Length: 114
Length: 111
Image (cartoon, rainbow over all chains, first blue to last red; front, side, top):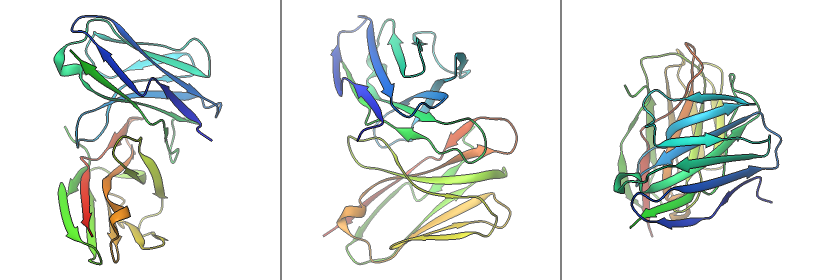
């Protein structure tokens, strides 16, 4: 059974039109992450929530925002998508941030920009 | 700055061949994880190595953590087409709390 669920699997939006990607988890994990992954590259961390505490990566553009209304759900908002934002967006969770905690990934949302 | 460098970046081999993927850093890691990602899916955890010098085996896959906990390797014996995918090492450095992914190795096994 899927434990980290991302919706939709494929999203198409227009240049400059706001878009929201969603992630839900059934693992009751404290930490939720959002990554951007471009073709054949490693995932790039955008930000993560440790419980309600938001942690932004220094090089994440302001165009990317996130919300975590409760433990189970986390959203990625792209306010004005540009062509360079077309990518796979991955959500992941982990029980905690420390040490050996592995991350559990969803299957991603592939975002296309017209 | 890329903390975890993987080599090779791309690898295409025939079915039945052996291969090794390397994950190197100048920083010490408390642990390293290896993930495999198939096209259109999220990364899936293969193994976590914790102790310097540790060797773990997962069927035809052998993972090793360097003695100094700065590097790791993944060796695949008799590769199968089902091994095709993007292999990623990842972990947290001893300094700070940030989780890093390696640069990735894209493996193609040709039947």
